[in-house]
Length: 247
Ligand SMILES: Nc1ncnc2c1ncn2[C@@H]1O[C@H](COP(=O)(O)OP(=O)(O)OP(=O)(O)O)[C@@H](O)[C@H]1O
Ligand SMILES: [Mg+2]
Image (tube, rainbow, N blue to C red; front, side):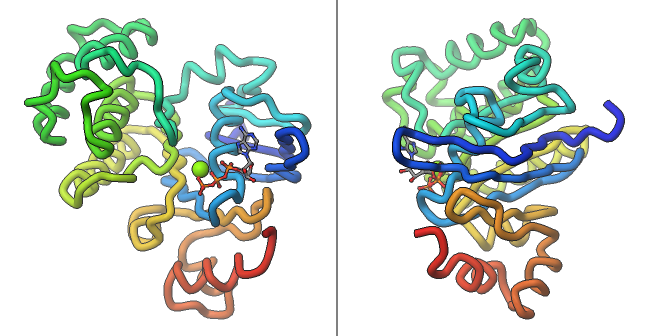
């Protein structure tokens, strides 16, 4: 859609009872970006991502994916999105292979079309021996791998991932970055929350810093370093920008 962004949130507000988690958050992720969302615990990253993927309804403001409003045009908006959740608790009694088959069928894709790619991902992520293991029998990092494989296999326009590398070993992290990059080269956009600042600094094209339910800084890595009084690293930017605010 002309002029639209891959993800756009305008003046987003979300309240859980007394807690105002998002206080007028503005976020714009352009097509083809690998956008890193960072911020302290409780800043509102997961709440933001859940609004983007339609799991939470904002109290005010709007959020769109590829120009489609997530609340009013939900089906059109969400057919473009893959989501890797922060705390996956569902699908515990499915095997890895059945879980992924289930996700594929939800998207109306044929298993035969993605089977080869699935086998490839199992090899790359060292999960071949676990294809018949139940999701609840996997280690933390293995769960993340299975979720990421499912998210990539449906070939989404927008990948929304909440701390996807949590628990992944260095080799898996490397594979993750390669595969996300490949998806982006193929036309996808990625929005990734993370506490791994070194990774975000090297991997992401843009970064947004959330603090206290607001986006407090955004730009390319170079831009945010300059904006935060000539910081040398993203860690330094983070420590300067979030210290004392919003908590
Ligand atoms: N289900 C809920 N009920 C009540 N409060 C909630 C709920 N989920 C989140 N919150 C509150 O909303 C705020 C934002 O939480 P959120 O999970 O979005 O933060 P986050 O940036 O993802 O943090 P983390 O880095 O720890 O994952 C916090 O104050 C949190 O306690
Ligand atoms: Mg979170």
